[in-house]
Picture 1 (cartoon, rainbow, N blue to C red):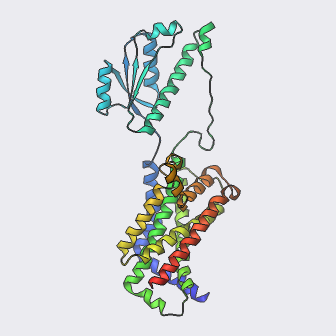
Picture 2: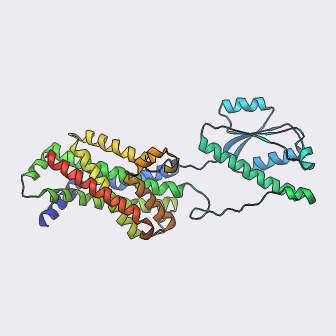
Picture 3: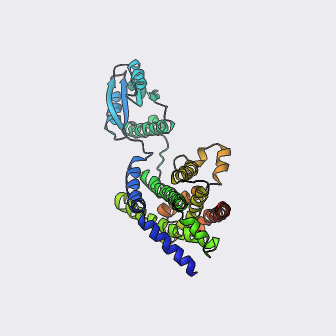
Length: 370
């Protein structure tokens, strides 16, 4: 135990000597969370919109007014014809176009259902779907306003009114989903990179070989390498939690203790990845590249950017081998829902298994390499 404590002290002294590590641990997470938290968003706002009015009636002007006043769209004015609309879509000057047909007001007063054409730029499927939802939402509000002036059979045309209520994120702001995910990604990348670079650096300067000729056992050396970086992972988490709270006003709704414990369990996988990468590299640049290679796959298959449900079935199967997939779920559940261990034990068990296997494999390869 005394030898292990000496190793841990040595690691902290070595980390302190490398000035770049101080910036990586304390400054980089705050800056990255600040920039990425604002930059990465799935909210769709201010969609450029143009309207073609072929009816020139009071009803068509009322529809134009409804769409021009909402903050969901960036109203660009009335286009002279549908031909101009196609040109605007081709030139990427507008994303949505609404064409009000002739006899729109007449059909409306007769109780008919006039057809209004909506053209949406479908290059970005996600934005196109949200744009159509915005159009339908505005049209429903406009229809309710129109129906106030009618009675009898025309009132029967009123559609069923659905009143949605969103839990955990009432305003559907993407930052509540993105920011905790960014925190998980930062812990993954930084701990894996630091571990890989630290070990390779020792090989480059020759101190690792000096350790191997001492009475230190292999498991003591592995723990001596891992435990300091577990502390760094917790420090990263603390910096990230305060940054998310101060900048974005997103605070943990669940247990901080549970969040810290889950972070330690998850970090075993990333630290094992760092040790594994260091055994395959001879220089720090090679170690960074190998760690990046594995980390980018973990990121893309974690469900952070793309929902796992939207991936092909065979890719979804591969994601079960990705510990970041489980940590993304855990950190979002604790942050937004305040979920307890009883709801997260399956993900915790999967991370513990992956972490244990990764540490064992990395240790065996390190022993063989040395």
